[in-house]
Length: 339
Image (cartoon, rainbow, N blue to C red; front, side):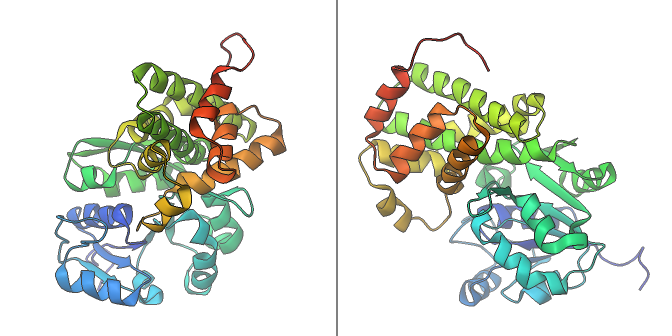
């Protein structure tokens, strides 16, 4: 079989709602897709029912998607591997996969989180664990609520890569009449925007849970974007990136969407529930919880003022009363509006 006639193949690691949605999108573009679900019984169920009822109910899976729990089989004979895993398990998966990966695959991180133990972005974890095998690396980020995209609601995203041709390749793989893909080159900014906005989304949910209004949330988003930008620039990102889809766009979407896990966590906290009880009942990961911890440490390390993140850390991990956190934010010393 010649390379020209060989069917295009791609792998997606992680069968949550975003990973499953990516698999469906790729299948719709003519790819044979291998979707990895680490739980063997869950993988068999999805493969048999041709629907991921746990994470993406109501969306039939095309026949060109195969679901399995054997990661070696999943990535076998694939040219592109999409990573849609929880950020805190990425490193362990990398270590298991490293001996199986060649050096010519295009790796695409669609993960929005920061590893707490190392304070590394996910692309940095991939590079550290995979070395030269991560030489072709791209990052995907934007205002992407997975169930909406799976139902062909018009949406947009951004992909940045080490090499422009790789960004363009991912762009062509995913672009469709309902999904517009832009390219960029600020990997740091894309990852930090997509990760840090989840902290503000939890805070936005808290304002909803407390029954506050649009004035409060508008101020929260604006000042939240300011501190995201401050930390991002300190870590090497360009400030203009945070005004784009992977910054402001993702921030607005996640803070207002009723389908946002992070906003939902915050709303329940605002209504008086404890974080531990909320997380026990969740089947999917709210990345903003661990990202709050990582951002709090990064702000301390680099001397960056992040008052909202600081208060969110105290609410999530020191059991501070959310109303008290709001009072402390409002009572800070008067100052000029500076970014």
